[in-house]
Image (cartoon, rainbow, N blue to C red):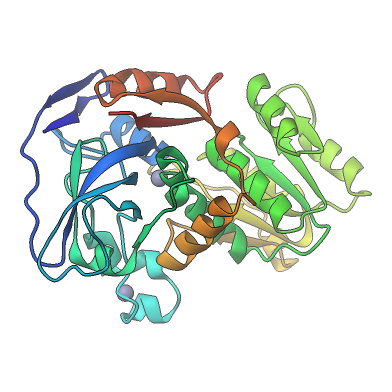
Length: 341
Ligand SMILES: [Zn+2]
Ligand SMILES: [Zn+2]
């Protein structure tokens, strides 16, 4: 089979690799769509994976083969499958930290979503794979995972009806947060991003106001729009410690800052501890679990969450290098999917 294999940032090769073999309880999936995630890009840029490597984890496709003992799925089924799955019984799981579960980190699709076929391990098949209806496209279904990650983060923040939410960083994940905040009842969403195009899309997606932090005083604007009180929630969807520090100054006393994106290793955060003393919450969230994936699926399937406008580019598997280049420019592109093979 063919796969897009990462050697280095400028050398991603479309080449022949061994098709995975499946065992008992496992499924061979023919990948139809795989989202290109910010974490795939940071793994390549920061060289966090040892080449040659096949990345990609936001998958949807067709069941090609099922192993012995698989009864829930049959060849030809259109499905979504998550790459990591918690055990639900360990110390971390018992504390609700499902995405920190050792089993969660161990389970993975094989070899990675940027391949023609992947092996879905037994635990993933049993707990985090489900059929998608015909009317849901593969590319929309491949966004269930990223939507679920945003949902996990935003549900931790307990938005109340009519709350003011600031989204700092309007890339695909920031924009997904924007849509989810409105869906969960936010009264107004204020978007902040350096890129004109992203601010324009944010307004199209329902942000009442968008701010260019290089040209305007973000804090001044947020205070003006909240009668001097500050936002109830600021979501930082960019891996930048300064953006997190700034977000701490945008929320009201008792407000919440959601730290969604991973910062480069070795980053340091400067925060006035008295903000935390005055009950500002700083909440982190990593990845997603089967329950958020199920909610994400329902929101997308029912049409309550429309993702079509979020996908701006589609590439074939052999064009992964080009797709990565485009995503890294962070200009007029949002979600990029590798599809149509
Ligand atoms: Zn992802
Ligand atoms: Zn566990």
